[in-house]
Length: 358
Ligand code: NAD
Ligand code: GLY
Image (tube, rainbow, N blue to C red; front, side, top):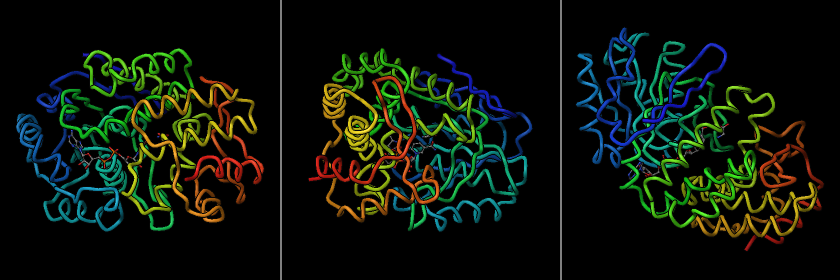
């Protein structure tokens, strides 16, 4: 088992990575927990809830299961209320613990429910998609979407543990694997040129879920994310670089309607657009833009963005937490392995849209 530590002011927790972790979830539950709610969805529940419930039952605590509807289009305040309804009607108190079993949608909603239920209770992340294992389960960003903007309602709330069972990826649809790999290669692009080159060399094995290669990718991704979050939990600076590709990507997601493209697909395509913009305004060599496009293609993500209309693109990109005083700010990469955050002239952004939109 690999263990990566996350340390932020006031919280420290382990990310445990190993095949079969699902059967040991009881080890993640704090001894003074009074009750446990296992939050999941019908897709994941059909595959893994029974094993998770069996492991959690070993704590001797009451375990209540909450099945939320599956899909990004349900990541909203209405669905969130379903969690509170069950917690309140079952008398869950402040020492109760929530366990999020699922992808980033379940993890983000469960974490947000934990952040605000009785002003904050503890929760455990059990991520079952590659994207959630390498990104969303780590670092304490929780929340739901609003019709006017993605992830706009939320809170920082760290889990007490992240339990990564690498075996569960075997049932993940290929499209979801590709979406998760977009977040993996993102770490190389912003922080580590050697990891980027390693991803280029291993793209086919990663897509094929080669156990050794994927295990290493998950560990390195968690280590890199833990390092960034440890330095800037609340995104007052450095952490924003983790949003490479997200300014363009979030516009795709909300422009097309949540769920049309997977989050990771939008991020992959957004990375190509961010690379094009980096070549325009931050000095990224054109041959590196080509490398980005090639690797995004190799992991199976789209590289051509949808035609939302230039003005709509710009207005969607303005609804972004990095925007300041109405100015869109982008994560840009002057070279592979290094990221900066800055605005860009409107004509440069329009040229990028012309080159990348179908
Ligand atoms: P998701 O949660 O919708 O899961 C994708 C699909 O895979 C779902 O249908 C799910 O039911 C299914 N699934 C999950 N595990 C499975 C398994 N092992 N086998 C078969 N099917 C499985 O999507 P996601 O890509 O995991 O997460 C995307 C969400 O994460 C977005 O809402 C995004 O905003 C959020 N996110 C949050 C952070 C953060 O820091 N909090 C970071 C990145 C992304
Ligand atoms: N996924 C971006 C972050 O956690 O900050």
